[in-house]
Length: 296
Image (cartoon, rainbow, N blue to C red; front, side, top):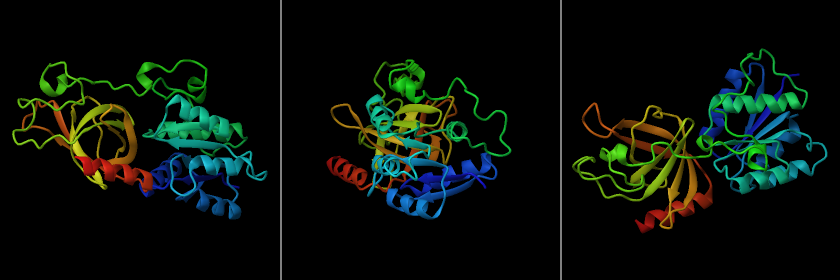
């Protein structure tokens, strides 16, 4: 019988992306999906599931509630459960581990991360995907820290702990040592630049960068970020951590890159204009965005 994986996420874009990666990288694996915990439970009543990949922050039944339901049901209690979340802070992961999570993946993630975590948990439960590439499952230096690293094991390397490289606006301003959240100087920004509408940290599979928000709505945002060697491309996953006035990163809105263009009409520009389309269907995030937008 084919291995069956259940993908649970309220964002259609995320579900479709995960299903494509699993089907492309693990031939023969059957992938089912659900938009929330309640629908996932309904699927599990009619389909034997070997592994669950579930979002943590979902409307209706959250990922934590879904997991606790799974672990309290004898028939489902041993199924590997991988948490997929835009939050990777230690307290959050500890809570998930206590609830019975098998492993976690932080959004945005690379295809390799998703496959390695999936294969690891399948193998631990005695399942072996067919036609598995020898390279799949081997640890690479850029792989995110394991649950142990966030729950008392080895320390998380600074480069993998959500630290922003290219943090200063020196890239935007030509060498001035300002914080990334501040608006670029008039010399560096386009002549007819609109007023800044806040700051955000943008997280992509292979890059974390600060951003000056220029436009934002319930559907998406656009802004300026420093140019770097690992620029995101169109359709890459993105998590937008919008900063509040007290400097905290909140919201953690999931989305994808809609466009990336040069910030100035010259080859050597150090500014990138980027637009992100949001994919979350979480009412709490819509409420935050609505309040944020009303204040700017």
